Figure (cartoon, helix red, strand yellow):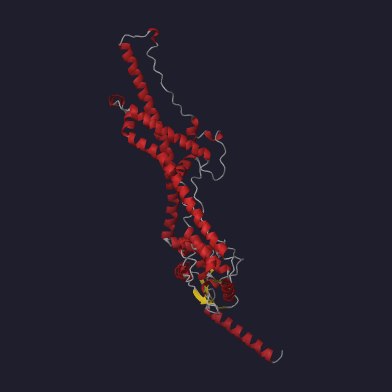
Length: 437
């Protein structure tokens, strides 16, 4: 299913008329895998085939490719429906951490308040029963700490707060989303690194006419290119296998790699300018703003401190049993409240140092690839000879519609008649040349 989506998107980006080499390069897939996938997609969508005089094949897909596939496959319809459902579910999961934080803080504050009031009342009763040892009636006063949670914390639950809420720039996270981003980050920016790697390698090959030297590929190999400075160039084997390439030996014994399938395209395209090397993106701690992060830290700290205070007040289990209700609920959930408060601050703290360590490694890998790219500019005599030989192998075959030997878009009888007329016209032209006409 995922491969069908990848192939379909590649076909759409390429303008619905493609060769197998076009799709393999656009999707970064192995040629054999791309060939099987394109054939399966062509059969499913009833695409037309165009065969050139040289035997090369182009596939012409309908412009409404997605609609055709959806109408024929219940799996694609279910996948599309599930993706919409999952987006909603995942959004609810993301905001749930912020909601739990608010509910936890509210439960803690209410429980502490009820326990403090009960303890204060009990203290006053004890003083009254003891005969009021202080004059003026003020000796039994107990000063209670006032805990205030301003309305700004709960603005997201007030439907009338839009007029007070500052305008949010397009694309920013709301506060509940920011809590999830603060806790767990926003995903790996290099999750598609392997796909980008192979797409870029295919672009490099196509940009150089289908023939390259190893030094042009090593800046994109990453760990696949370990030992990239050796003379055997065995690190090129995965590239040759993926895109059905073949090594060619120059007159001076240098190795050049040719990829015939990537030299065939359905239409000439603009000049490809691939990057100099494969650059990994640094990880971000969070996409939340600094203000949102500070609010999250403040609420998380309040939640943790409140849980510790609540734990001390819950030592009087007789009072807890007497009050019941919310206090009993807080007592039963106490370790969860304390654990959530600790994890709310502990997870981001550990993740911060992990992100810094990962970014140092990413920077080192990027620097290594950049050095490989810079090495290509050091044109030694051997490298110059290989590049010159590679130029003799470059080519691009564009499958136009003028020299087709066969197409499924037109009835075979009509094609045979048109082909006969074409042959007769060419034969007549040769006769005229011979007769001097």
